[in-house]
Length: 349
Image 1 (cartoon, one colour):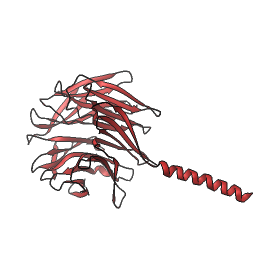
Image 2 (cartoon, one colour):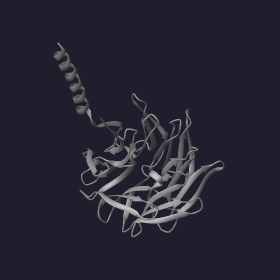
Image 3 (cartoon, rainbow, N blue to C red):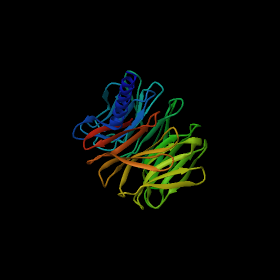
Image 4 (cartoon, rainbow, N blue to C red):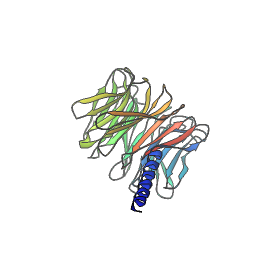
């Protein structure tokens, strides 16, 4: 009898193990779908680990917002009546898990900021620029004030904007070149902004740090490197940046220590890695989502402390406009565009 009981318990535990093994891996969902929906995605996780996504709906010409409430996805329109390009949204959530979104209104050439107060969306024009596209990046400081970076082609400058009590305050970060694109913004532990961006040509990947008085700018990688940069701030405020190197045609990852940069190639398989998004896990190990444009697939790379592990998450003409977040269990959550659809992939065990 004891043998049968033991065998039954063993069989039960084995079934649980096999069930977990069977369902471990990537779970992929289509969140919103039509002819062209899901461009310019941005993703953030709230305090419960639930995903919030901002994106562009090219059919209605609007910025949209999707969030998971633990049971199902909810979708709503934030702002509408745009042209059909140039949104580049970025999302953050505050301490009450309410969304804040930066984006570019191409119809009115306006850099905008939308925040939800629990009842309605409040939309503000931050700046007006003469552009078709504008590459916004946004985060909230400890007082929940928004900070934003973007390229203003009117004056050919990278700008930093923050909302003060009297309104939006804007300053020039870099004005040395005619074209500076794909900005990525973070705040350090003192609340000072740091921005990575791309300057085509010999200048390449630039990194700007504000020290409470001035902007200090360094070149991280030259000779055309730095397109699609994604920046995060790690332990002791060390900057971590991933980007595409146009010269070597590779996905690169760089870490700075305040004086020098250590750079390594992550993926050189096809030479066409675009739309990078970077996050760090609880061990400060980097995770990167990106599009392999040659294979038309969504790929994901993570460093396990010794090696880079690379896998294809989704394939078949997909992976554009990827955005990545890592949860408290170090699992990845990715939003991306797939041939007219907004899709979401998360890894679980």
